[in-house]
Amino acid sequence: MLTYFQSIVMGLLQGVTELFPVSSLGHSIIFPSIFGWKNLVAAQSDPKSFFLSFLVGLHLATAIALIIFYRNEWIRIFLGFFSSIRNRKITTPDERLVWLLIVATIPTGILALVFEHAIRTVFSKPLYASFFLIVNGAILLAAEKITKNKKEPVKEGNSIETTVKELETLKFRDAGLIGIFQTCALFAGISRSGITLVGGLFARLNHQDAARFSFLMATPIILLAGIYKLPLLFGHQGDGVRGQIFAGSIVAGIAAYMSVRFLDRYFHNRKTTPYAIYCVIFGAVFIIRFMFFS
Image (cartoon, rainbow, N blue to C red):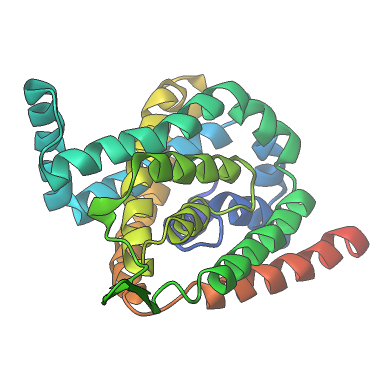
């Protein structure tokens, strides 16, 4: 069964790695193996175990933390949704943002419903997660290299313009592309926040706007996934572990709030490169560990 110590450690891990571009699912699969927590390792690939109920609690706590941090924006987005429906047109930045988020959420929502269980069952193994962590790091490094000149001014006629877009000018096709990028996070080791941030960079957003859009679009995905599987928490799969789930969820929520607060400032003038390097090294070390020393 799940102990309180395990739930607190895993809650802390979830709250931090969900928002940092290093893959929460990958870490949640690798770390129990490192610690020798065989009960969690076995539970991860068992669709009838308590582990899914545990993840529901952690995800809901993370989503609540994001809603609290971006509460003012979510109020404007909520009001913008209804005003755009009432007026049958998009006239304000908030109305545009809500439909950008909807367009970006659709691809992952569809694929998650169809393939999430199959992908999780097959690829929820420490060795696979380590491999995809390397892939995640490589994607981040490649994106930084490809988009490194995006802030340089370009001459258009007699004027000088920048190639960087504001979030409010993001096109709907670009939002859809970011949503397609997000589907890669179904694989343990590919970071949801990292891959959507990469999508934002390719759409020529700056790092701060790309991160902000990533966190905003992650909120409904994480929240709806948690709500969809909420019956698991209150069903027999949650029996005997609800106290542990609650404790882990509290820790996850606090850690997620502190993480998004830090990253919102960090990406104002910094890049994903340190996290990319971490993923490559961490993944390589544990590929060797699981292939030759397990």
